[in-house]
Amino acid sequence: MGLILSVWLNGRAADSIPSPSTVFPPLAVPTSSRLALTLSSSAVPPGNKRSHWSSHHRSPHFQLSPCKQEVTRSPAELSSDGVRAEVGVESGLHVWEITWRPEHRGSHAVIGISRQDCPLQDLGYKVLLGGDSLSWGWELKTNKLWHGGKILACYPCESRRLHPPAAEGFRLKFLNPLHRKETETPLLIPERVQLVLDADAGTLGFAVDGSFLGVAFRDLPSGVELFPAVSSVRGGARIELRYLNGTTRNPPALMALCGLSILQNLGHQRQNQVDKLPLPPLLHHYLLSCF
Image (cartoon, rainbow, N blue to C red; front, side, top):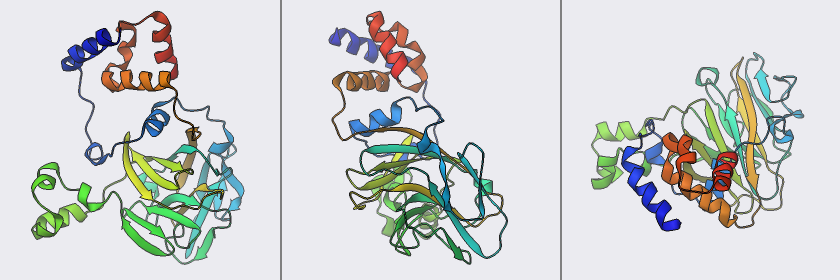
């Protein structure tokens, strides 16, 4: 059966329709099977408490929606304001989606994680999340990573932001000024960003347009509750939080890994053809219901 399925998949590969390309797929990095399964699994119901912003741990300039899944920053001058999720995690691998339209960001728009006692308001316009040792933030407008009040790096890193032909033959320091300027131009981050927190490994990364961009922060504190968080200085900014999925540190089940392998070979454009695979109906149902 395995050989038949492999031949069928390889034989149909030429019929696949390429998925829409953006700037982010070339920047994607390989993921572990644990993360790949989590990113490809169906999202939990939207009413999950991990999708709620906290009604207590927020700046008074952030107003919550009745469902607690959206916050709106009220117009306020010379103030930097933050809010964190109602529920944090101490272990496991977890993925949240933050929806924040680019036109509602302004300057100093930051997403990331924080500890429970992270400051959520300060005077002036500044990067609040990542502005101290209790939080880690990705500033969307500049693509900079912040922690401890310092810029740590550009994310995605410069070496992966070269166009593929340039990346093959030249190092960044040998590029002419025109190419150097092009690679240093911040990427426009779309409205939906997935926050990927592996509390077991102590890492935080982000996924955009279905592409995991790699680990942004390492050596996060272990055994400490960590919360998704955002900070903003723009009046009228509306930010949504949705918990997508999570898993424990246990190895993935073999059946789930097999299902993931099948769907990866099919590709996004052909996943509606699962029922045509040379598999028993029970396995058709499993693939359709789990992914």
